[in-house]
Image (cartoon, rainbow, N blue to C red; front, top):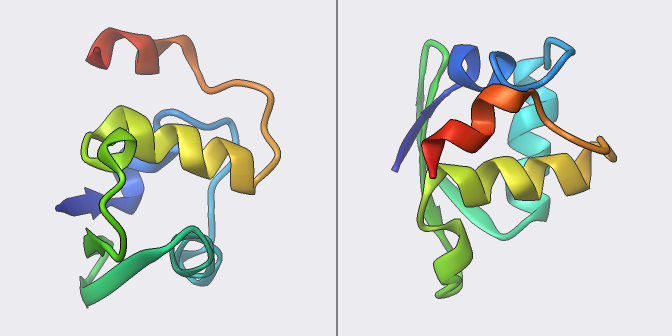
Length: 78
């Protein structure tokens, strides 16, 4: 799955540093296959179906960065 850092910044109120997002994904059990500009190619180390979709990734990042919520726009993905 490919995830854009610019896309992630649309759902959170803060701009993340690339290294912080990479650290978060590694901590949360994702494998990073490649980094091309601001696009990360990810896969799950374990079979977690909740993170197979972009909304699940947003939920996990919210947990890692201790954010109470994401911008309302995120709920329109489901």
